[in-house]
Image 1 (cartoon, protein in one colour):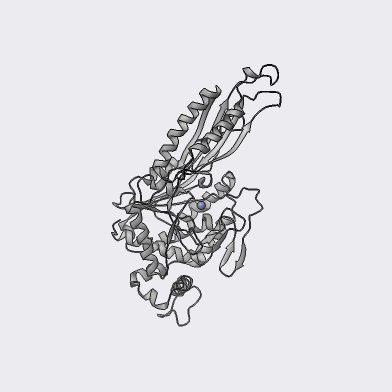
Image 2: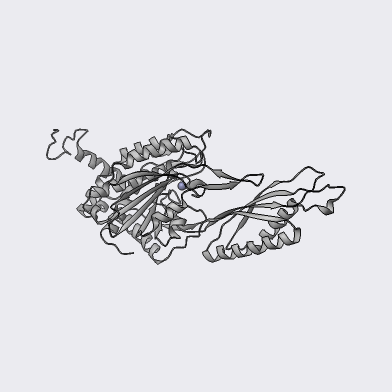
Length: 441
Ligand SMILES: [Zn+2]
């Protein structure tokens, strides 16, 4: 058994737990740019709680996971990542499970529907019988495919690391794992239960995990999702618009362009008519982006086939509903006027996320916990979408940008502010502690 002097700080051996705690506290204080007095504002319980957070371990986890390519279509990479996460999360109580993806279909350029493959999702359920239960979510996939040139990590300065998925969001996964580890060592752990969900398809819209998100959100008091902060200074994303993706397959009738064009029903013309009508029904509350028309035929043939793809960004549930009604009418009109048939695939997969009273209280709680750590937490609305949209639509209050500070996500310039790992883990640990201690939303 190792022996340590009563006061480790005198000559702390490298493996002395107290010296490790001291280093973690110094990290958190330095990184959160804390004045020395700020830490002393925390009760000794809370100081002890965040002192267990280990910056070196946080960084090692994040770097190890970033090194695994997990483009949403890279099923082998996702399998390796799920195994690494299952191993890491096995330190928490409860059983880690890998759950098969829900079936998802898409429309090819030829208009035929085909099945899209996805990786498994990771779940963990801890104390499911607890009266108050929370949900923690993250995603293991990134936007960088297996053959992307962006695979490596590069230090930009002492506190800034560039690499795939560091901010979005392998760093975020490390943040909540280590926050939960700290909580499990504290005496409030027994007062809460929680579920963890790490899906494999967030970057392509969570179609293969949407039913699982909905199921796991049921009965939860609050949820925290670990997307990176909206701005590198830690600003959170507040209200979010929604998003929907549509493919319309238009089937007309082919004919000779010179002999009998009057017998043809031109699918490209019908697709173009839909595009113009979509722009007519667009409102400030629901921008519409016609993105692609595929199909057509040789120059001397009236084309009988086209696929039109577009995206919408409704800002409120009302705007989403109005759009869907307008789209149904528009499709009916074009079918009649152009004598074509139109098949609709897709819809709104990310409902708009307004911030209701309970969600606002959760934001206020995060801000208050930040203040007690010397962190000035702000928020702003955004047009971006994430799993927080789906969680909020189940009526569960959620803050969905609890992950690391960073930026330039979805590009080869993606970076993570390394010190924000322990800074944000401390923030989460305090928020969870308050919720476990009976904080009402
Ligand atoms: Zn993300």
